[in-house]
Length: 360
Image 1 (spheres, rainbow, N blue to C red):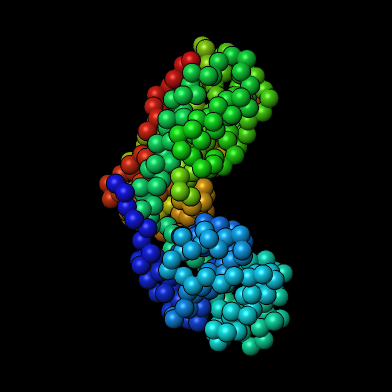
Image 2 (cartoon, rainbow, N blue to C red):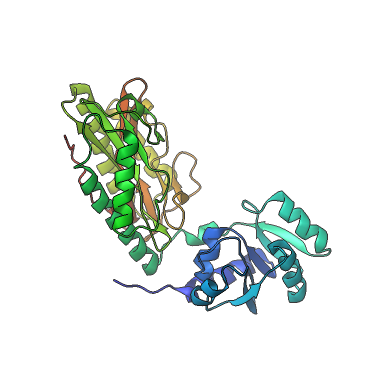
């Protein structure tokens, strides 16, 4: 499938939000949201969007790129700093209430705009939620990013062996992802072997992998701005009965997650269900993070699947991760993760690398 970027629906949803927030314009400054609404993938830029105008404010480095990517927007070139140009454009638009991304804009920039725009009211708004349900274009891009990560995983299996350093494994993974079409890594690659496996975010170090250890690989590719996220844990050499027991528990919980992550359930409910599953298997206290998170233009975005989730109802075409893990200090750990597509009946894994225990 080669789906097209759906500008009209995205902008229609944004204009509905404009009305709901009762503001005259949105000032969009978060890079992911600038890309989502305009198609422009550069940084140091902003969107100013009202009922009758759509502007992309950027600088000379990006004009040519913006002309290609943001054809639905009027381009405004700034040469004296973006904040100053924003003041000029807000004044010119004659708007009196402006929605700003309060979780993103710095206090300094907010204070500058308020000082220079006397009489303009600024209201903090949340736009990230508009990105939660993925359109056909986004699903297509994420599928491609997942395929790249899967292909790289199968290649790196040939490289993992005793006395190879974690950083070398990470480098091989990243090399193959780039070779297969990734623009960059989706996040800092995690390679955690042996007792370091108890660190959920154990980024690769100079530690040498030893026989009898688990190696947890958490990595992702980026395709056309969209991310993938996958974790696989493999065994090097002969492992103990306890290691095997932990792996089977996480494997069971991860497969169970694919069944319970369905449209209509809350983020808290699916997290609780998988957490209870691990508890019955004897490892509830060792599952120390949430079950998953949204994936898209950002590697961690809404909705969250956790005890603190604000998602009251998962919807079809949301894309999240299913990543239970067990972590035992001074022993090690196991995590298995897929990027999955939410449907009415189950979660469809978009990452398809084998999950049965691989012993190298």
